[in-house]
Image (cartoon, rainbow, N blue to C red; front, side, top):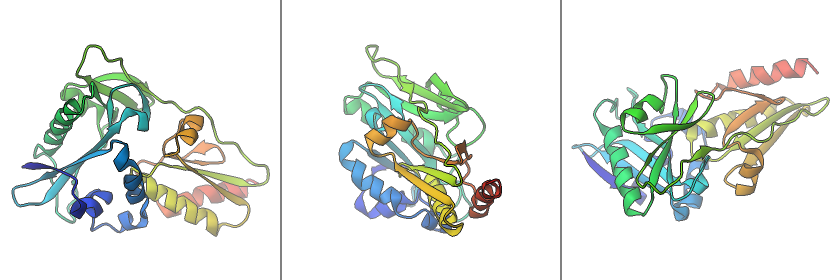
Length: 260
């Protein structure tokens, strides 16, 4: 196994999270590519795992904590570790040690960059980015928000523990209309997919549906709301993991329309 930095020839593959076979990834648009172009000069780091046959089977992306969903100093935040686990495309690459190898490579890279620790988010349920997996790799939970845990591994005794940025404001209703608030950062194609579906649903349901979007790569927007990615219909947050289908979002908005 080889760990590679992101080269230009792999950018397209990286922007679809190694799922170039997926129609859903095409539906998610070019938001991740635009986000990458914006963040690559702000300290974003990407590493890819390549097997002995030259196939890219895993990736990790991490960024200075100032550009993430957590508060801290002299730290980097892992946005995600992803090892291709589908039967389609290149097939299942999980349980081959790629995730651990990618994490170790990121830790060494951050140390070489002068970072004093690495931060990650994890879910406390058996799903993608499990907090329990990070704990096995020596990470400690330092903050929580519902089922989301913030973990870290410090490289220095002098660095302070990070904290999650919690939601600050809640979207408001508009009398006589259904409001659809969509918060989009761009780094995650799954979240971009939810944004695109919600936008199409809203435009198809008439003038009484108001689609309000927020680009949270803007620090002012993120600091005002404390929401990086999310979907709200009439101020009720819609669960977006895994991404709800177009039909599901359509029905949720329709139900609110009938209540007007």
